[in-house]
Image (cartoon, rainbow, N blue to C red; front, side, top):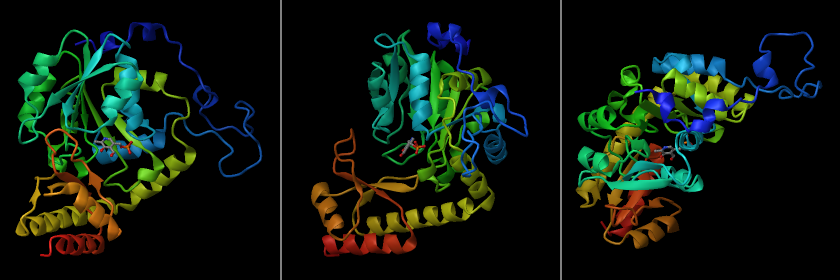
Length: 342
Ligand SMILES: Cc1ncc(COP(=O)(O)O)c(C=O)c1O
């Protein structure tokens, strides 16, 4: 498959903006090329537009060539960029699982692109025939989210592979929560399939949501296109520096293990008390309550805020509860015990 032939035609002739730090990335004694302030503030210089140090570090962690990595302002940025690059407004469409993360649909709507929602089955797994049946020659991107938000489960490898191999456009797997089930990642398949793209983020297991750093790992021509379309300095110097320091600290593995252990603990508590928590591979649980809006309000009275997902397809009665620290989970379980007079 020629990936570039899927991109919007006018982008073939795009002359990307060439920033000062792109044109000259070496060291100099005096920088008079970027209309920056010469007075040091710690941040008076523009950042590296292609984040090479950070990409090198992430590449090592993920075992991916830095040239196959794009870094965005959160993974929400590549979601929007991919739709803008590959979908012709008013003509093309994307396929998305239902229920799933809301931004695929919002980014599509902003760009005047139809989002075709395909219902997941009763185990919240994708049915490949349903996706392929809904595709036509204008279906450019199929988004999958594994582990899926808000359901929590990772998608079945065989079903996803079937989709990668049979869908005639890009398959984007959003692995925002993959560190909570690393065996289920598709990163190892990146080089095998040119139409496979993987989104990841430093917002979840890495604990850096406030920095806004998301990744799109893809074939080099796709990464080149993303770089051409993004704003020149989309990642601040502060975000690049802090991320580099934090990634070297390595507290992620330990913290992730705590969350996974706590997820089991909370799930067990819910089960023992007759509440249904769906199987989760992520850092949250989708939990069914007899009266979700009442449970939501009562938890809030105890100062605990969760997410009401009861209006999502197949999630009737459900609240989505993020796993916190052991002490926060104690508070959550005490509050639930109180609600149900357990
Ligand atoms: C599935 C999924 N993808 C992407 C994101 C956005 O991540 P980021 O903070 O990198 O923009 C989220 C955030 O909740 C998410 O749940």
